[in-house]
Image (tube, rainbow, N blue to C red; front, side, top):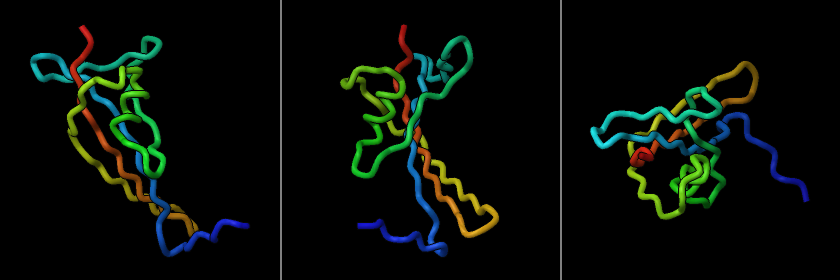
Length: 97
């Protein structure tokens, strides 16, 4: 069985979840991966919990409390029939000591 063809009039939709660490003084703590600044995140599969995806991407235990921080929507209208709608969910969590 073949999947249905994509309707070019309807944008493809993607959701990603990201984690921003914060200090006890409520300032942003940049996470470093291999010495370079990083914003841990990953694509959220349909039906998955975005907070779990953000925790996993940041290497945090499943019990780490997260707070929803922001949602950003990006619309990309590329040449041709492909249009993208990307929702980026941002969470905050206490920075590790």
